[in-house]
Each structure stands twice: as structure tokens, then as C-alpha cells.
Image 1: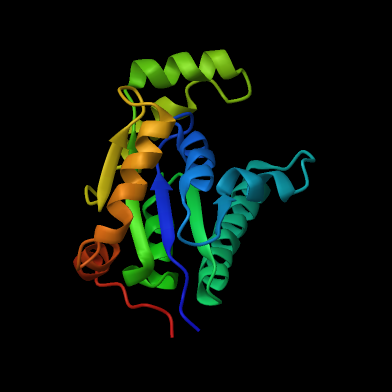
Image 2: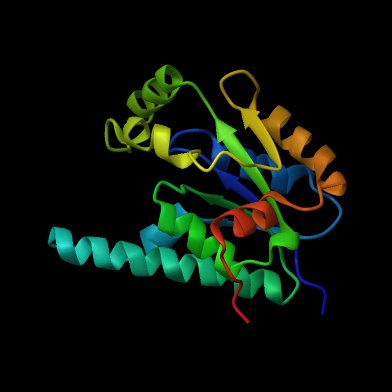
Length: 188
């Protein structure tokens, strides 16, 4: 069985990852893509009040499960659009360990901090300042296959750019380069 392709969108909260993912599902016509979102996994968890320690442990388990779900879905041939916030180094390290690097197109989704803050206020469903907390962390690894800026391009334009780039993925991929840089072995 041929593993599925993974278009992995990484950016801060409110950067436009989910909007790009929806556009990609609409325009990708060389396969059947599914959208896996870290927000969807978060919403599956019980929403009762947790202590900070319980919350952190539950969040970590949820992220670890999310990463393994991506690997399992792609491993049986599903093409995926993933949107995630790699705001802690262990999240990237875990993804590098569990995902086949040759299957991942790693896309950095950028936007100015001013625009992110405006979007947070307009949405009203996000913790104020969340994007600012994540801003310097999410892209700190500094290596992507492709990058887009939703402050200067529409989600549709970004999706079209990604679609057009997909058949021309680089070798080695950003995930391969990052695995080598951080000396991370893949799971067997």
C-alpha cells in the first residue's frame, strides 16, 4: 500500500491554517484529501475544569495521539491536510519521529502579529494574546518546504500555491532535513 501524502500546515492560532485547509480540499483533484486539525482533536476532550497539571498532561496526550493519528491515516494511504501549532519543541520532534519525512510537505503559514491580534479580536473564540505567545515559537526551527503569508495573500491564493508546488516537493524534504539536524530516528 502506498502511503498518503501529508500537507502539514504550521502556524500560530488565527494565522489562517484552517481556511487554507478548506480551500485545499476544494481544489485538490489528484486524490482524496482529508483535513485533520489539532483544534478538532482538542474539541473531542472533555471540557470540564481541570487543574493546570491535569490540563497539561491531557493536552500532551492529545497532541501525542493527534500525531499518531496522522501517521496511521497516512500509513494506510490517506492523503491529508493537517493543521497544527508547533509551539513547543517536543511537538515538532514527535512529528519528526512518527511521520515519514518523504511523505510530508511542510508549509509555514505566516501572518503579521498585528493582523493576528486583529483576527483574534474579531473571532472572539480565542484567548486574547494566544497568537502573540506562539508567534516567536511556532517557526523557530526555521525550515519549510514552502511558506505562505495570509496577511498578503488570500487563503485561496495560498491553497493554489501549495497545490501547484505539491508535485515538485524537494528532496530531501524539510522533515528529512530537520530529522537530521535534531538527530531524530523515525519509529519502526
